[in-house]
Length: 196
Image (cartoon, rainbow, N blue to C red):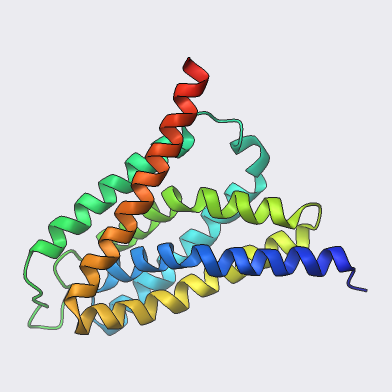
């Protein structure tokens, strides 16, 4: 039987996932926007599978992660580096390889950006989901699965939009930059409060 606390925790987790999956989807969409059909699908699949493993690993040690001072700051700095790479890529013209080969940037660099960005951005998501799930381990697993599915679905749509409307990529980059600055600010404040 499903208890009221189980259903309440599941509802909270779904709402958290819907709220937080957007940022990750923007990163994935930006990373794969220059890839052609098959390579784009591979990059999204591999990137999302890696994200699932990262989130599962983070979820298993969620409570210990809360005690690591400076982790958010490090994640923000890592995400800032991802922003810089994406900014440089956005400044170059959109030209796909004429022979149908790898687009500029390539499949593996795109997957690498997805993994690094997800590692940077997933901490808050995992901690929020773990907090909402409480003692319901099934809710934690379901929440992580939902967030991965939302990210994959939204990233595919975002990548298609970025193909058509290049200006959206700049807005997406600003969103990711905003998340990086927030992580740096919060992480820096946390470090300063423990140093002082």
